Amino acid sequence: MVNKMFKIALNAGHYLKTSGKRCLKKLDKNETREWVLNNRICDMVEKNLKAYTGYSLLRIDDTSGKTDISVEKRAKKANDFGADIYLSLHHNAGIKGGKGGGIMVYTYLNVDETTKKLQKTVYDKLIKHTGLKGNRSEPLAKADFAECRLTKMPAILIENGFMDSATDVPVILSEEFAFNSANAITEAIVSFGGLKKVPQDSTLYCVQVGAFANKSNAEALVKKLKVAGFSATIKSEKK
Ligand SMILES: [Zn+2]
Image 1: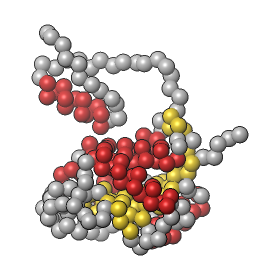
Image 2: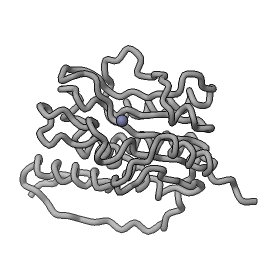
Image 3: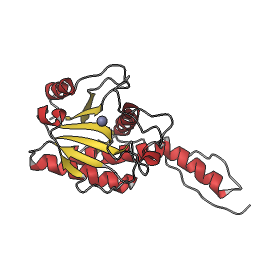
Image 4: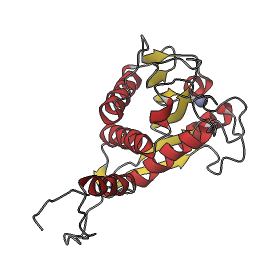
């Protein structure tokens, strides 16, 4: 018997040109667009999931960022797909250049226990992996978001920090934050859907990349490798 595929509807909120959805200029001179940040994490989640089996994933946004798919259309695509979960990735605003904020995860107003469990699993893992715990009174929040209202499966909207918070912006712009957020979301999907690792070839191919006389250079390389999706450790030895 073939196991039923766990179906994931994933999307990066908005599109490249959605007006106003960007980092506050005085905190980020590039005014990085929200879609760029949302999409970066979505792409990393998709890449992470390639190590697993037993699922089918549909991106219901335009992954080129060129066209705006309405939230109604996104919900319909997820419903037609028969998704088991719906994840919408966003970044928040509303701090107006002040401090604080942090990660929030939303559900629709009235939801079942499964959706609440999904919300809490994703939130807890995000805080564990990114450390971006903010000062909102209810980081596990409810709102009348159309995409959560119109979808038939457990649906959540993740706000990965505030684009107008002096404390969040430097964090959320970093590749490392996106990487950690994607790992948290991946872990939540894997546990929620009961996904299994793709069996690996038992041979290990180790790569040696050289030695540094300066510890911080070695640490910088390890950090880059981690962001690129590789595991790396430092082993010290005497010259
Ligand atoms: Zn948004």
